[in-house]
Image (tube, protein in one colour):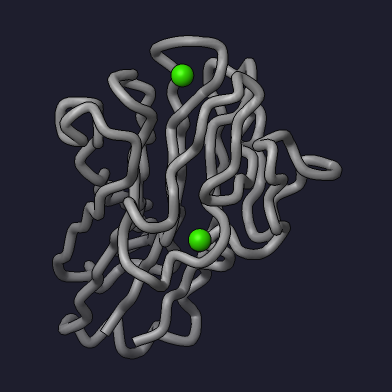
Length: 194
Ligand SMILES: [Ca+2]
Ligand SMILES: [Ca+2]
C-alpha cells in the first residue's frame, strides 16, 4: 500500500533549521493554508528559540521518521494546513464497496505542556446527487498520554471507505496551550486505501 499524502513526513521543504526557526518562505510543500499560519518544519534534536531541546530521534516513533517533523511554531496560537487528495485512480475500486482505509500519524508535544495537534480525515463525495461527508479524527496526544515526556506517539484509525467517496481532505491543526512556542508536533501522516 502506498501513502496517498504528499509530504506527510515533513521531509520535503526541509531540512528544518537546527535552531527550530521558521524555514525560508514558510511554505510547506504538499500542504496549503487553512486560513491560519502554516506549521513549521523542525529537525529532530534541534534546539528551539528558548534554548530547550525538541524531541530527539531516539525517543520518538520508529526509524522511518526521518530528519524532520511539523510543529506549530514560535509565537503561534493556532497553526493549520490541509491537503486535498483526489481519488480518481481508485474510483472503480472504491465504488466496488470493499475498499478499506488506514489513516495514521505521529502526534505529540513538549514536556508537561498540553500543546496538541488535531489531525483529521474527511471523505467527500456525492451519492445520488447529494453531497456527503464522513469525518475521522485521530485521538489527541496530550501531556498525560506522553507521561510528561517530550515526544510523539502513533495514532491511527481504520475502516471501510464509503462507495460514494471521490476525494479526501486531510487537515492538521496545531493548538498552543502553554508558553510562547506552539509545541504541537506531527510526523508521518499517512493515508492508505486497499
Ligand atoms: Ca519526518
Ligand atoms: Ca508550548
